[in-house]
Image (cartoon, rainbow, N blue to C red):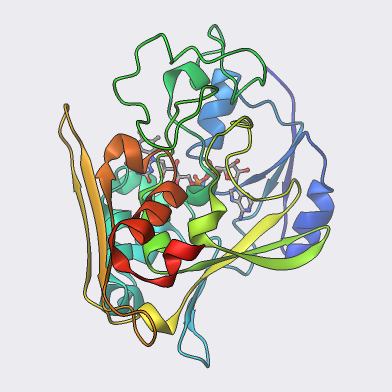
Length: 286
Ligand SMILES: Cc1cc2nc3c(=O)[nH]c(=O)nc-3n(C[C@H](O)[C@H](O)[C@H](O)COP(=O)(O)OP(=O)(O)OC[C@H]3O[C@@H](n4cnc5c(N)ncnc54)[C@H](O)[C@@H]3O)c2cc1C
């Protein structure tokens, strides 16, 4: 039994103060990923800051027509929300394609974006893993890697990222809102997840101590016909998120598509590939 401190924060400032940017602190959403990793010994936080009581549980339309999703909105609630189902069907469908009903009832928007890879070499302490412990090597490269990344991988890591939601958010040009010691900032969802490169331990652009406070869905992609397809095939798993008509200045089709192992190498890989591959949209320049 490893002791740890549990803090239930009721405001964003309280959560940030309790975390205090310490390397041994972790925010806790639904716990469906973090608690598993604690049981496996992959994560051993000394302080858990529960964020589920923060006032970040609303899906609301903003004055400019965008839709803001609070970080603690549960995956099931987000998938079922009328604003999302009507304006951003690709997001609703992507959420429903992930995990199970029970998990989606617990999982939060922030936690979903920051869930760690399900690579077994990452999850098993007896094997080397540059993502878990930098400099130890990649057990998957010469191991069992049928479900691992084809595109976007590096000599240091071939793990994949599991978030279906992140793919839809990238396709919709969503923005991730962050709050931390350096103040507030936003990062485009398509750039939020990093490719492994030589720092596979860094999954995303988030800085230590930063809290995801929400995600903003822009009006430009609202109401466009869109769909998410995740076909599970043991040999080749394909996933496709499609948004038609890019709005003013973004004519044409943007399509994120690829084998599951490509998708899982990170939402940005897909989004960037989609921009390059077909849309003729601005995404290609990012
Ligand atoms: C059996 C199984 C199958 C699954 N299949 C799929 C699938 O097919 N597709 C898919 O997309 N997902 C899948 N998942 C993953 C599931 O979606 C995630 O476990 C879930 O989304 C994580 O959300 P959470 O709120 O429980 O996160 P937590 O476990 O609470 O946290 C995950 C990480 O996010 C951090 N965190 C949480 N909230 C915040 C915040 N607001 N700000 C900053 N940091 C935060 C935590 O510190 C932690 O590092 C599966 C999970 C399981 C167990």
